[in-house]
Image (cartoon, rainbow, N blue to C red; front, side, top):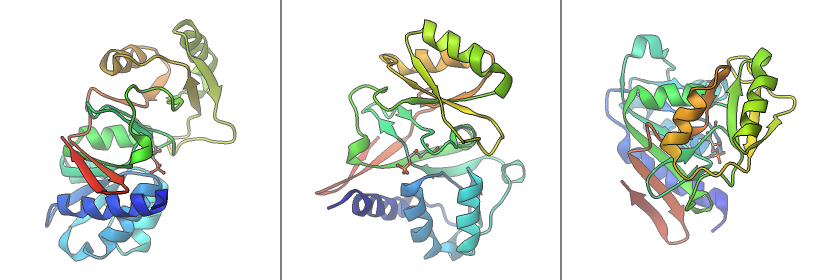
Length: 218
Ligand code: 5RP
């Protein structure tokens, strides 16, 4: 089974977590794109969706799914999103697609966070995937120097700005042995809008697409 087959399979498995008559949160990325396709088949069962990126918003609308602003939706019963890395503690690295800030807000606003990945994303320790940091433009050199002091190697994501108009630094070589502590430490650096560690609010359910089917972890 190739990676896309696993992504499609896990995306379809996430449909059982969709709450009827509710507004649900929808993440960003290629795995979530399969979820949006699957969601289109049951769109009559939900009131609408909060999108974590302009790309997800565009795709939801193209499938005739109503997109609702989080400001009017209030807290959500569930959100479904992908990840770049996931541990057995359901700690994640996210932001490969650059939507980390909105994804973190939507995850925090959701009572249940269902993360969908293929098995290439499962790791023992976070950090082999470069950690995305969304930063304020005028602070990017300052943040980069602080990151070097912490042992990381930041690289500006060229030709990219987030939906919030900010650049991203992708940080390699961090030893993220304690994700909760690292997420707090990075939250404390002025100029970082959002870091891609999702550990203070980890996933509640991790669905993993594998050759032998979908595995579920809680
Ligand atoms: C976007 C994300 C995505 O969830 C993450 O990058 C995984 O994407 P994909 O499903 O394409 O592998 O965090 O900001």
